[in-house]
Image 1 (cartoon, one colour):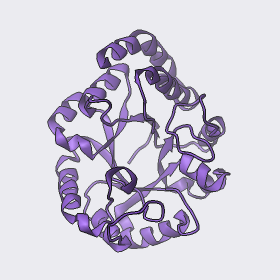
Image 2 (cartoon, rainbow, N blue to C red):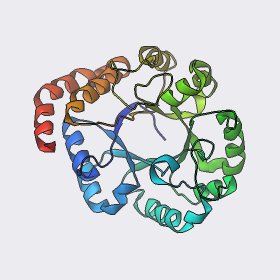
Image 3 (cartoon, rainbow, N blue to C red):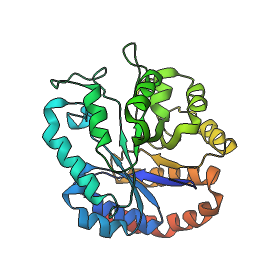
Length: 278
């Protein structure tokens, strides 16, 4: 599916600014990939125009943010609508994958009736490549055990996994055994800074202590070929420069050919993007 490293950013609505507007601006800077949410289906034509050929990934709803996921039986209507949109717009939106969490009922209270088989049946209806992400683990949930069942149930519908660095770091402390164990199945890596206690979704070199340099060295040493998405959530426009610096950090370690041109674009274009978002 992917034969080179793509570095991207999570794009969602921000302080009244739509995903389409944000996509247009980050494409202008030179970002080649973005992970979006189902909000793009509110205005798919505008998103297509703004993305202008960018490759996109789609993150499915999760209980903690959307109140449901694809395992919630009572949400069949919303789930079917999302699946219809995915299958309709997969090619026009250049969707490289659809990303699902395992159900997170072990982490968050929900009034929904949860069914793992319902999750798998819904994922099998999706005509785009499906990727599963390691979520937070506890005494009631182990991702490795879940993955064995998912591979059995989904078969060829499952393209691979997303290794979420913060989720593994918070759940296991030493994330590298998990990274090494599943390396050949990894098609996508989620990165952002965090602490051992909290998933902060912030740029690097700030409050967090994720061992980002060691992770990037591991990926380079193992010749990782796939997507790296920075799952960063800006709190204000002042976060734009730290976000872009985090993007540059990935390029510096893993894609030097793009690093220096992007540094120049940061100098000339980032102030214009800042003005556009004001």
